[in-house]
Amino acid sequence: MENWTQWLTTAQEIITTFGLNILAALAIFAIGQWVAKIIGRTTKKVMTRQGVDPTLVNFTASLVYYAALAFVVIATLNRLGVQTASLVAVLGAAGLAIGLALQGSLSNFAAGVLMIIFRPFSVGDVIEGAGVFGSVEEIQLFTTTIVTPDNATVIVPNSKLSGDNITNFTNKPNRRAEAIVGISYGDSIEKARLVILDELSKDPRILQDPAPEVNVANLADSSVDLQVWAWAETRNFRDVRFALPELIKTRLDREGITIPFPQQDVHMFQRN
Image 1 (tube, rainbow, N blue to C red):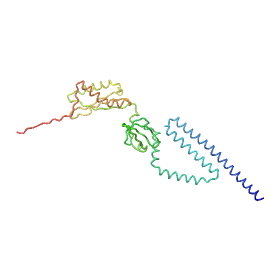
Image 2: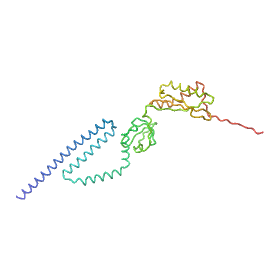
Image 3: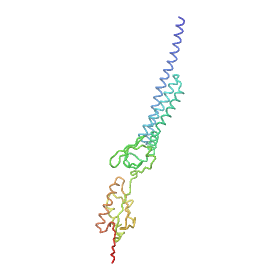
Image 4: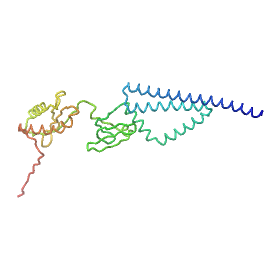
């Protein structure tokens, strides 16, 4: 009977002790999870107010939440009497091994974060980078999707884009279209210049500020080459770029200014 009473007393003490620890651990986990959610939401709100890209906002908020939750889990296990020092060491070693295995992916991720923060280009921009030219369709943390002019979809790792020169063709409001036109050596350079400028002033797609320019680019074998510069809004650049030679050719023909083609004189000598 005495042994039975002693056993009940011991069991009661164990249940009381562990029960309190379990209740405390549950309380720590519940409150900690609630705090982690608040921290994650606050991070998301602050970054959204700062105008950070939504992709980076969602990722960072999730990362902060799970990092806080990891501390909560460790605190909960510690309250239950679990030795967390060895657990943290194991998790650290596992994280290092995973990091080495995913080195390429992590470099893509880091490049994606930097591109989202510094924004060398945005969705819809026309760029050239990593040997690809086209319109940016989507920017993700690991890859960027580019649609080429022939409607092919190219998925480029972010590390390749960030490690290469990037040319953004649409981040400025205006672009300059260029054309080279040759006139005969017998025609007046000044007349050709005035005629071309007059024709460019009539096209509403061509800006007059900055003003178009016509300059002598080269004295070629068969022609005087004039370089024509015309500014247009970026959205009209492609149309102006391809319309420019036709506009100039049509007007020069009307004015009687010759656009020569390469010629070669052959001199024949007859021996007596």
